Amino acid sequence: FQPRIKTFSGWTAEIIQHVPNSNFTNFNGTVQSLYGFPQAIIHNYEHGRIASFTKKDNMTCNYIWAYNWEYPIAEIKGISYAQLLNSISPNTYGKLTLVTESQLNEIRFKFAAAEIFTFMYKPFIGMEIKQLPNRTLYKYGYDTFGRLNSISQGTSFSDTKLIEQYKYHVTNE
Image (tube, rainbow, N blue to C red; front, top):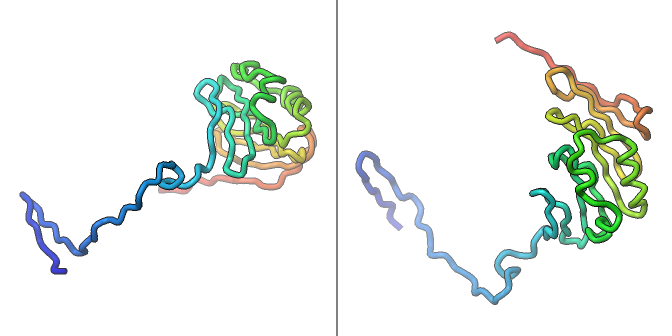
């Protein structure tokens, strides 16, 4: 292959490498033959947010949203969306602008057999509390500029120990 130089009005391009014709495979009629299996299948949306999906390992994951549908307050794995709707309505929490510890505990109690992650937020700042299925709790602290400055870990909302602290310094330019 001999490189060619093409001149277009005002600039020059050199073709350095020859690209052979593509070798397309035949389509056998199934989407998986072209794209592989999907990583997740979304089943339901609530107010433009994903409410339920199934991963390729067949684990169903459901979300309950709050703070005017901006942030998820619970991720519930191991139950179907129909089971979720039999116990609560997503609209119960969606319009809340403040979520309390008792509301999160109510969700945990209703789905005790499921794997549940719960979250609380400081709107427009970030996540304030994350609780894992094993009840380990992480609290996130922020400074007056909205920057993360501490992470605490514990087993209850009132009993946490500082595990990480961040300090920000301004340098002269």
